[in-house]
Image (tube, helix red, strand yellow):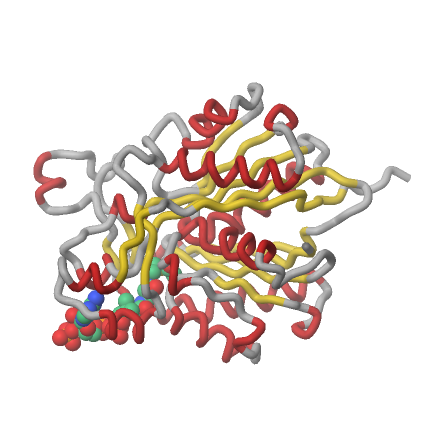
Length: 329
Ligand code: ACO
């Protein structure tokens, strides 16, 4: 009988821009306070990319680190997948820009858009391609530069977001099978609660769209909060069920770093104590497609995880989209 192809997680990497924007810095440009932001969100500071530092540049730096960690040359990569909602341009894809920067041979490269759940959607796509036997080494990146689509006059949103990138190499293997399960969902009827109105075909760019700040994120925060918690719990429980593992088998939960109150509410509803929940939102803010992978990378590099540990990633984002994955490190 033909042996099943497994998915090995060969390496991870991450990159955050150098420039730090603290809550105290924000106090100088909008009517807010460190106290309001910290208590409502858990965020203390976030990283901001330079104007000449596009999404593909952060993706490139995270990918170089992941390739080095995995001891894999760019030439061995046979597919590039980039989860992002802030591409360098509407087209070509950021994955194509990344391919050129890494000098990867003409392997297929494409972007996927699932907002903050993007990286988990990406794990699912990579798993399917590897298990089918079509591709052997996939570079998967979660990257966003939300500060470039933020309305810096809107205190309801501008305090929440940051920039960053995380990368993972997934390889075909007959020995390891590290992606135990993935569960995904979406409900487009909520698309009016978290969105970027202009710049696409629905509302192409005009002077008017620029003047009305329609190229920046619009969000109904309370409604997002209300939907995020049950959907994240649902996704996390489904992925756990499909993996055949129990709550107590999971060494670390890595939720989407959107908001400390969402993270705590999800943990409470699932009966997980906060010492099993990884949090780095205080220093990153919400980096959308990059949150789960950058948090996972930090947990690995700071020795919070060791080989063989089971981790659950769970996310929720605009669309709405949601997803969870149970993986073995
Ligand atoms: N500083 C000071 N005051 C503020 C700020 C700010 N940055 N932002 C809003 N306020 C004010 C509001 O104007 C309002 O004042 P008012 O009562 O005089 O009108 C007051 O604070 C309360 O505002 P609410 O919107 O009711 O605040 P809430 O307690 O709901 O917290 C928050 C807002 C943090 C955005 C919350 O709704 C939330 O966490 N939502 C989830 C949104 C989220 O995480 N989005 C990320 C993208 S989606 C994702 O990644 C899952």
